[in-house]
Image (cartoon, rainbow, N blue to C red; front, side, top):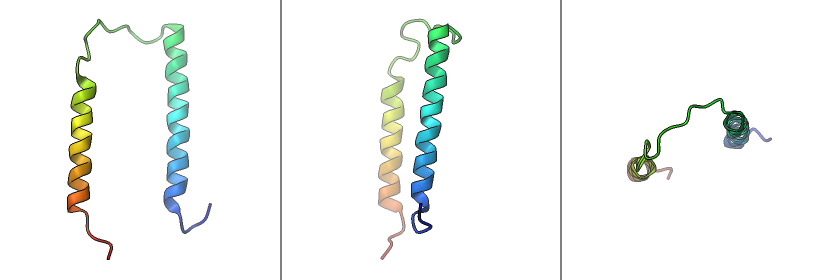
Length: 68
C-alpha cells in the first residue's frame, strides 16, 4: 500500500480484526460458550445506538474543519 493512503491500511486492518472477532464469536456461540440472554434483554438497543451514531456523524459533518 502506498504511503499516500494511510487510511487504506487502517481499513484493511479494521476489516481483518472484525472478521477475526466475528469468527471467534460465532465459534463461541456454536460451542455454547456465551451465556444466553433472556428474550427482550436488549430491546431497542439497536435503535438507540443507531440514533447516537447518526447524531455523532451529523455533528462531525457539520463541525469538521473545512479542507479548502
